[in-house]
Length: 304
Image 1 (cartoon, rainbow, N blue to C red):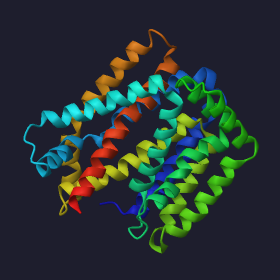
Image 2: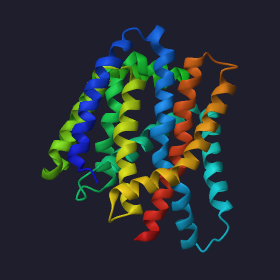
Image 3: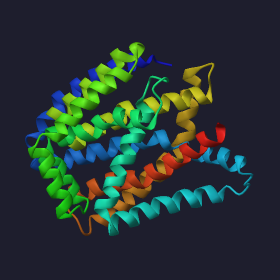
Image 4: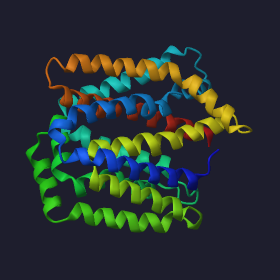
């Protein structure tokens, strides 16, 4: 497997290259949004969601532990949770967004964490906070516009966000999370931590929040998780394990991509294309994130 430090440095290098080309489009977002939104959707549907496309295999393992033979139960449960999240977003968007951001913060912190000695709920939140706080710190208006596209119209929530922005609370919390995260990253992973966080900060300074998130989600979070899955599939030979991962993840990746595209086609009947893409990306990812994290939790709980 490629070393963690090498992956972190490659991610930093790639981020620097991409922010040089895509970052310039941020200043002209109104005219470039269709292209960049479409690019983000393409990357997320190909590289991003593939790291969760072995959930059916993990689901089979979980069913065995509960002595359930019917595999349809997994697909039905997984799908119903996803549909429930979409339903909740439509009827309680502000509440669901807050829960989603908290869950995503924990998930990103847990999956991207390198120090095995820093494994706790609070530490995972600290590690994941920069992903959520950076866009609010450096591109507040653009981030708020994304929230509004996602049906966030609660005046109290919006006023709180404006208060945090005016008082520089987002950037203060970001700085605190980076300092504490550096302390808990561990001596062996300091280079990786610094490289990744520099990349994330620079991406969010120079690029639109959607672009910054897409680059992080696809080229750091997803690829790192995919590497871990490849090792689980073949501990002796990483290349063979990664090839097996690609073969096994392809079916669900394609099915998910088709569902996202069908949803996009439906939403374009009621939204401009750029807004429809934002809804498909973020509400779609939320509908995948909750069952994915629940599955991971249940597996870990039953393996202890």
